[in-house]
Figure 1: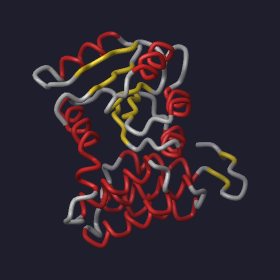
Figure 2 (figure 1 turned 180 degrees about the horizontal axis):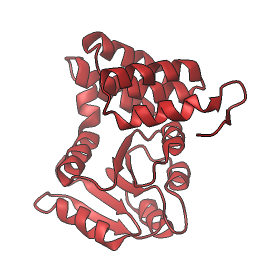
Figure 3 (figure 1 turned 90 degrees about the horizontal axis):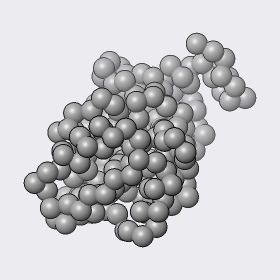
Figure 4 (figure 1 turned 135 degrees about the vertical axis):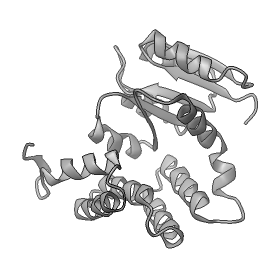
Amino acid sequence: MRHAKLLIVDDERNILTTLKMAFEGYEYQIDTAENGQEALSLIKNTDYDCILLDMRLPDISGLEILERCKLKNAIIITAHGTIENAVEAMKLGCVDYLRKPFDLDVVRGLVEQVLQRSEVAFSSVLEYEALIEQAKLMIQRRKFSSAIETIHKALEHEPNSAEAYTILGVLYEVIDDLPKAISAYQTATKLDSTNVSARDNLSRLRNLDLDSGIKLGY
């Protein structure tokens, strides 16, 4: 999307500078904020096409900003293994993540993906990639049951997709079906042993009392 408006929110100035430099040569309007209050003020006055939002800020958490502003176009940035927060963020319609340290090519690709999501999701050829983007769009709109159905359709095209099973696992967590979440994460890790998200999520859920939701310890 040409002339897109981007907001980068992080309390580390070097990260703000690095991310802003990553989009040199792009026809984007880029604003930055070093804390939550500054971000809220900018979001109030500008309709951003994509927001890169640090999960932990000195004053307001990224989750609180997501909830207060009803953001549907945010990419969460985290260096803190906040796996439970990933589930909470998805409940608020956020499905895209960057883990620090990150590769700038990955950042640029993810931003482009978010900007083009609606166009790709409703393309005439609903193959695997389009179905995944359609599911993410449904998550942004908090239509979780529809997103689950769409992920299953995507798996009909790519039955060995660890990515799809990982998203499915988080979605089952969102609707509090933890046994199905565990099953999805198990499948994802079997398909791809390097899938950090699925592995960490599976480890976390295996240490829960599924009847009470109490963490039993590591």
